[in-house]
Image (cartoon, rainbow, N blue to C red; front, side, top):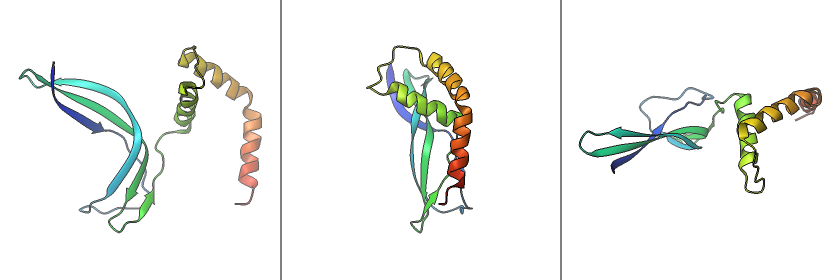
Length: 129
């Protein structure tokens, strides 16, 4: 199979803190992961390989060089699951259990300690900044 082109498809969104203008060039830097790879037949004996990239962190520079702070579009449960997967995947862990089973048990543990998590959240909200 001959791959004609390798194509990066960027899929996702972030929330902007303010309005931006059309017709201007912006510098966008992003961090994320490729979560899907597809082969598309060019019908000439070659294929295009398309990598779908989903951003996690994005920074945007305006034409004036200002950096806009963008909000992470993922909900908190996605962030918690991704953080747990990062720990699970780290080389020092070497876990032999299936991640979905680890996530299910971790969710039960989180639910059990929720009262203390709630109290810590209230404490942090009450602390002066």
